[in-house]
Image (cartoon, rainbow, N blue to C red; front, side, top):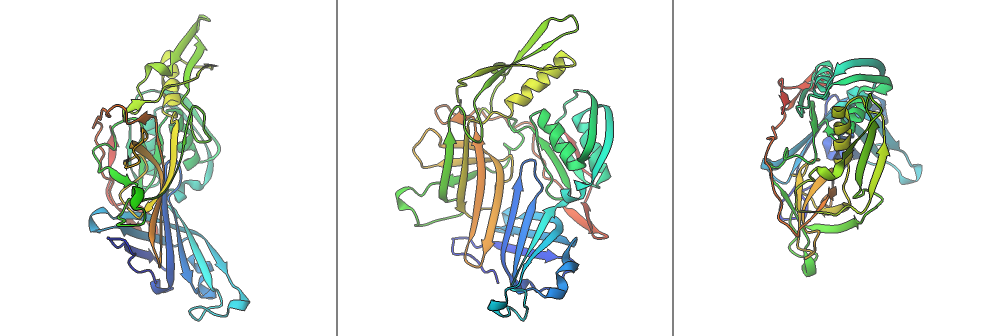
Length: 387
């Protein structure tokens, strides 16, 4: 059974599989992950699992709550997607079961959006698309107030989730679906800036001593003009207007994250494309800009529950130019009988050479919780936040 870990603050953990009949005392590990443009995921590992229960767990609703303390708990709402069970005759029985280990693999509430379909949306906006999908799945939503009208969106052999990710990414936006809430946001905006900033601190020469939540255990970063994970390019995007005249829109005229001194762009690429209007071209240009992150890092820290995709972390105590503010791309919490650790993927376009110019608009609004109604997660209350 999972106990409190060896850090200064123990982990608070609650796991509920509604309709399941296996005791929580058999749980030996829990992993929960949140990421931009991906389904929330959770894996619950049991030591000993009745064979008679395996197929019955598929599709069951799941709720997980975790946190360093009661003030910063994070929730996972979802469903069992599949059960990964292992029976090894040489190992005998565990908890009176010949299934020695079973991993219950769960997907978040956006799992409901995986059905493939074909639909045409005409003369719509991103906010209208999100509103339509939120209504379809009984979800609340948050979305930027972008009034650019998209003439046609063609959903061909795509799931609603794939469609949503594809369309918001064209605008440079990101999307998550934690709880029964679709959250679309601009990673360069101040949307998350009014939320607590998580400090990730290198223990320096005192490694292994006095660790606390957020203490860095491993840091692996890539920094450069072109890396496996990002780049620092500028783009001149060209199209022809109705008269055959070339119109150009450049990313160099757009601001970055403003988290520090902007990393210089070594290359300027000239790209030709088809665009319906100057407004469309400008929107495409912004989309290219919002995908430019030349600094990227994978960080393992002593377990901390505050970071979420899109939020800011502050890297400290490396005495480097990359100390400073980074944007969270993904978070994975791993809890077992021995420890609680958090793995983060973070990115930035800035160095600490210049202090960040923070904007706190638009304001982040905490989404409502989910309610379980007839074995389906739905939003506790309606929330339509167009900002």
